[in-house]
Image (cartoon, rainbow over all chains, first blue to last red; front, top):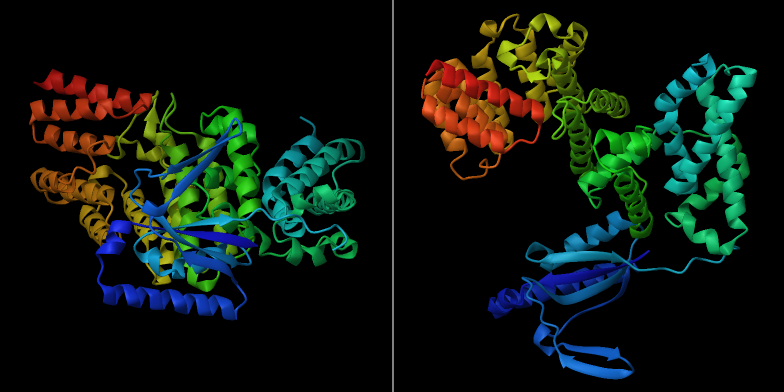
Length: 121
Length: 417
């Protein structure tokens, strides 16, 4: 199954850490990515630009509305994601627990909707 | 009731968890497994009435349920759109869906373990874990579970549907957890079983204090867990704890009034349950891996072995609570420790410990904190303070039996002033 691991972090706390710590965390991320790649479990993933760069798009009555945001008043913001291949939820949560930000933020684990295999398979 | 019908109900209760566990492994679907087993019970109801009860009713049901499941799987396989119903673990489960294997009705002893760990998976809410465990492993009907928890049947039915859906869609595995996880997962299973017991033992709402059906079911599940993982001392401790608490059931309520441990008629305690409970505690402690259930069971055993309240070895109980406080920081344990200290070393010392346990405010909304505090104040003849503490306790419980108990205490205080 494929799982999307959404990484929620407190942006302010992330901004506040020293450059040295930041580099170390990036190093840990690279390592995890390498591990997942070598096992064929890495489907995709990236860090996201801060929430201040977000744009919302809505189409209502055929009209396109583009606005700044959204800026929900939440303690943690979506800061990145991994898309991984895992046998089951336990394996997906094991990977999630190895994401460096799991120690300070929250990782939301969401299974992807997968289309059923053909009956003959 | 006819004999066939009676046998069927008994077999239903005893074999449900075992049979369904295997059907789920084979089909990878809770729903298909439930349907197949339901159909098997329906055909048993008519067949056994006519032809008599088979020699091995459990095996009969297993075989018929497996055939029904196989039919259902065949029907499903001819329809591509239905394929997604078999989604979870489809790839790995596929080889088992071969007719030859099914006809043999293979049962793995591990199936019920898989089932219990799946039902109590941490990604399900505690309410869902409880409902699913009672429904599948316990074989209780949705109506019975709803009734036991005083919930509308539709609420419970929806809870079960959502839980099963999550198992399927989120890919919750039907597996015994890996070694590095099993301790946590087992603790969750134990917590679910003990929660079922407690809901029965101290029903949090309604007119009766004890719901015997839930207690009996929890004890039965506790036995299953001991049977499946017999070398886990906490499984034994949990079963012992439930038996020892249950042994006091008859003495605990009198004419709808709550009777404290101190005032209970000990001749009404269930000697058979006490015997079994005490033996289990000893067996668990010999395994030398102490835990919260074993210690609580050991405390209950000290109470059970005292012929009168005065004979209670309070020093031993204090020591056991201290051991318990070393492994859990629960304020409720601190509260019980304080109450034991009051009995062993005097109410003054107990009261100051209770105040300390409640100092951080965590127990402010806990009925027993105020009731225990009130009880010590009453014993110390500080009646005004006792009255106000009892009144706070009264406002915090919705159980009528507990409310009556406090009202009785309040009356006896105003009589003694």
